[in-house]
Every structure is written in structure tokens, then in C-alpha cells.
Length: 137
Image (cartoon, rainbow, N blue to C red):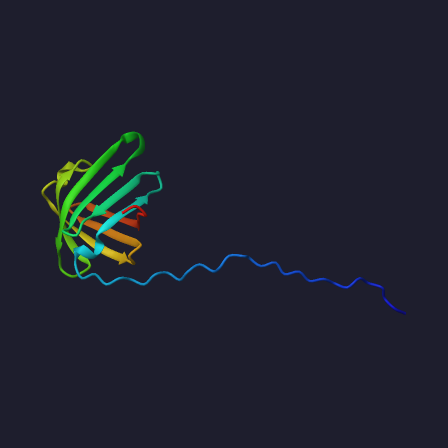
């Protein structure tokens, strides 16, 4: 007795996308000039963070707080305990006026060139933020 079954056709559907590139390696910092650039970030309440760091260490952070409006933090980064740590002295801080003229610590937790993770701590401040390099420099 012969079975008359149609031949089975096996179809394998593959994704047409290439696998994502591996994460970029950490970049060793020689000075604050290595961080030069424009970066953006956001948080869970949709605040926007727009960070600019120049080659001399001037750090300008504009925070768009939605209905609460914008505020700006401007300070100068100076070398700290190691190549990943800097001191910042704010010349302008509309977001927290108590820290104008005071010194806080800025630690670079991670830097790949495209991603920048900063921890700003000291005097009751404990902020951690992951920034992405802006396409517009």
C-alpha cells in the first residue's frame, strides 16, 4: 500500500537584518578634552538633558523639565583624583542655586565615545545620567 501524501515543504524564515554591532569599547581618558562634544539624555518623566563639554572643561547642561520650564547648569571641570574623576565648580546653576560656587565631584563611570555615563556627587547630590553623543556637533 502506498501513501499518497504531498511532500512536506519546510520553510525557514530568517530575519533580514544584520546582527547588532558589538558594544564599543571603553575609551581611556587622558584629560577633560577627550569628553569634548554635545550629548543628550532623557529620564522617566520625559525631561530632556542637553550637555555640552568644551576642550577647556566648560560644562553646560540645559535641563528641559517640561511644564516646569528649563534650567541651566554651567561650570568648569578640573582634574581630580584620577583620569575618570573631575571636580566641578558651578558658575551658574538655575536648577539648584545652593551649589553655585561650591565644588562637586563628577565621575565618568563609562565612556565609549558615543555613550557617556556621569555620576555627580557631593553635598547632598547623587545624580547618575547616561548621555548619548548628539549627531549635531
